[in-house]
Structure formats: structure tokens, C-alpha cells
Amino acid sequence: MNTFSNQIIDLNEIPQFQKIQLIPIHSNYKKVVLYNYLLLKIAILIVGVALFFADFFYTKPLIISIAIAILLLTVLTILNIRILKFRSYAFRDHDVISQQGFIYKNQIVVPNNRIQHISINQGVFSRMFNLCTLKIFTASTNNADISISGIDYNLAMQYKELILNKIKIDQEAE
Image (cartoon, rainbow, N blue to C red):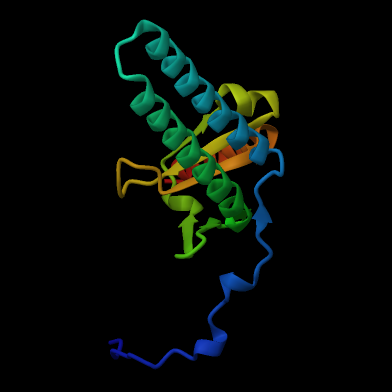
């Protein structure tokens, strides 16, 4: 008969995932973010000019509102570009790690055997630079557990194939 044991774990023997070298997102992703915000600013300007010439609103409040919207979008653009340098990821034999956060650092580790679905999304500007967003889902939620934006499309496809093959092998072994 086995005797119950509840020994103290030596913290020095626990593998440290924080010590691995994480890969930063692709440098061209900054351009994707800039183009997205630029497109939004152009849309706001077009609507503002159309309303200006349609005489639906008083001119002065309309111009002030558009200027404030453009200013806020510019601030958001700058913040998002600065935050991008805090995003990184790593694919390992048994898991994937994602890290992001400027003020609040968020590190997520998902074991490969818990992954149920992987999706790859590409917007218009991401497609121009051969980048995508890799979303990794487990059974825990409807939302992606890990979402890596600014990853090279070919690398994302390779990782997706690797995981799907591991899942297939695990299912056949059962």
C-alpha cells in the first residue's frame, strides 16, 4: 500500500520559463498599426468634410470635434507603437508562451496538449507585409487564450501544422 506523501518542493529545481529568450513581434507590424490608424484618420476627415459641406452642423463645433478626434487617434497611435516593443512570444517543445504589457505585464503559457483550435487572421495591411495574427484556443473560454499579432505568416502556418500534427498523433495514440 502506498503511503501518502506531501513533500516541500525545492523552488530552485522548478524550471524557469522566464529565462528563455522570447521572440519580439516582426518590426513591420509597426507599419501595419500606422496604416490602420491612418486609414481611420482619413475616414474621419472624409466624414467631417462631407458634413462641413452638407451644412448639417455648425462649422466651429464640427471642426473642433474633428480636431479632437484626430488628436486622440494620434495619441493612441503613438501609445500603440510604443507598446509593441513589449510584445513577444516563444514556441517550445511542449508549450507556447506569449508576453505583452506596458504597465501591467501579462505572460501566458499554454501547453500544446491543451490546444484545441488555432486560427490565423490577416488584414489588408498585414497581408502586404506577410504578417498575421495567430490565435490559440483551449477549452477554457470562447476567447483566444493567446493572440500573437505581428507574426510572420509562414512561421504561423508552420506552427499551426506542427500543433495539428501533434494533436493528430495524440488522438491516434488514445
